[in-house]
Structure formats: structure tokens, C-alpha cells
Amino acid sequence: MQIVFDHVTKRFPEGGIGLEKVSFEIQKGEFVFIIGESGAGKSTLLRLLTRQTQVTSGNIYVENQSVKRLNRKTVPYFRRQFGIMDKEVGLLDYMDLYHNVELALIATEQPEASIRPKVLKALSIMGLKGKEDHLPIEVSIGERARAMLARAIVTNPSILVLDEPTANLDSGLAWDIMTLVSNINRAGVTVLMVSHSKDLVNVMQKRVLTLVAGALVSDEKSGGYNSKAMDIFMYRKVMRRRYGSGYDVREPMDKKSFLGSS
Ligand SMILES: Nc1ncnc2c1ncn2[C@@H]1O[C@H](COP(=O)(O)OP(=O)(O)OP(=O)(O)O)[C@@H](O)[C@H]1O
Ligand SMILES: [Mg+2]
Figure 1 (tube, rainbow, N blue to C red):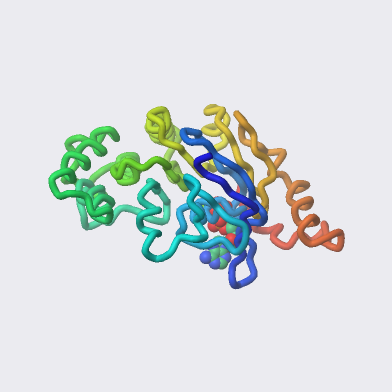
Figure 2: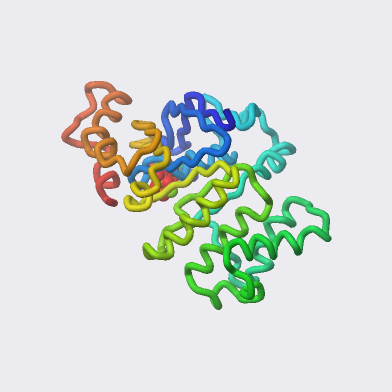
């Protein structure tokens, strides 16, 4: 197995539960969607995987390497196997697309001569030939998303970690991104993708992990958007399991935030 989550729990100092005893395994080359309401723990799961944050208990293994055991010296090398696209980490607006993508390579100390062809190739795969010297504000929103994807793949990662790569895109543009990600996956790259788009998840028929209040409540081989796993009854079940039968089902602790988004 390329990725193993073994009873991974993440608690935040303020007492919030990010993830609770989440276990699953992912094979090299798989395509996995991660879905769940806002606050369910999707981004936390991805950040634990790429060691942007540490587990509280349990452990994660990537290519048999214990993520808990990584130290300040080994973390940068560990991270090189990931391509990351996160809505929180946009393009630098004062740099053209070429230099935005190049940044990802400079961080990995590539030989100088190999940098330019790699950047141009990544931009070209994403259909951005000719836009290299455009600033992010000088291209369309769909092109910006593709440039972020180019930045994620330019290092030739074996695992692509995408946190809502189609956020803010209309459905046509979202499908463009989906197609590009599919192609990368077909070339053998493992993909973990958080998505709020029911349509996208349903049509793709890929493996779907569903999180509810930090718990993994469903893992389907070629699933659709699992509304049943995400309904209020499942939420109550998870909370009762966590806090015991004393948990008051009439007053879910996070009911507002849980129902706040759809
Ligand atoms: N750095 C942090 N410090 C404290 N609590 C956090 C932190 N990061 C996340 N949390 C909490 O952990 C829970 C899961 O957050 P996470 O960001 O993983 O949710 P998400 O599923 O990605 O939601 P969204 O769809 O809104 O992005 C939330 O209750 C959140 O408030
Ligand atoms: Mg998130």
C-alpha cells in the first residue's frame, strides 16, 4: 500500500476534533475523492498526509515511511513526493505564470538547466502555452486554476493532493480541471481530491471516502456523492459513539455548522 492511515486522530489545542480514528489504505495509482460537510475534517486529512500538521495519535505511512517519525531534516524530502493544490495557497500575484510554477522547482533544488523545460512542459500540459509571461490577473479564472495545477505537477509527484481544485469555478471550467486531473491519474499518479461538487463525484465513479464530524463513515469503491452517509442521522450516530448515549440528539454540538453548508 502506498498510503496507510492507521487509527489517525487529530485534536486541536482548542479542543476541536479534526479527525477521530480514521483508517484506510490507498494503492499506488488510485483516484480517491474525499467528501463531507464543511468542518468534517477533509483538509485536516490532507494536511496530515503531507505532514503540514502532526497526528495526535495513530499513524500515517507513505511508501512504508512513518510520517510520525519524520523530523525537520527529512520532512522536506518527504514532501517532494506530493503535488499540492490548495485553495488557500493561491498564485503570487506579482509573478507571471512561468515564475509561479518555477517556484515549486526551486524549492526542490533542481539542476538549473532542467528547470526551464520542466516549467514549460507543465504549463503546456495544462494548455497554458503562450501565457507564460502573463500575471495571474491577466488570465482567466480557469487558467489560474490550471496554472496552480501546473505548479502542483511540475515536480513530477507520485501523489497529487487536491483540496477543492474546482472551488469558485463554474461547471464547464470544473470539468476542464477534472479532465486534466484524470489524465494525470491515468499516467499513474495517485490522486486524493476533496470536492464539494456532487455532479463531479457522481459522474467520475471513483472511490469515495465520506467524513462526518471527523469520522470516516463510508468508503465506497466506485461511489457517488453519499448523501445518506452525510445526513443528520449519521452525524448524530457519530456524536453518540464519541460522547456516549448522554449526547443530546436534540442539541447537536455543531448542528449549525454542520447544516450550515450544502
Ligand atoms: N488549525 C486549526 N486549529 C483549530 N481547529 C482547527 C484547525 N484546522 C481545522 N480545525 C477544526 O477541525 C475541523 C475540521 O476542519 P477542516 O478544515 O479539516 O474541515 P473541512 O472538511 O476541510 O471543511 P471545509 O469544507 O470548510 O474546508 C473543524 O471543526 C475546524 O474548525
Ligand atoms: Mg477544507
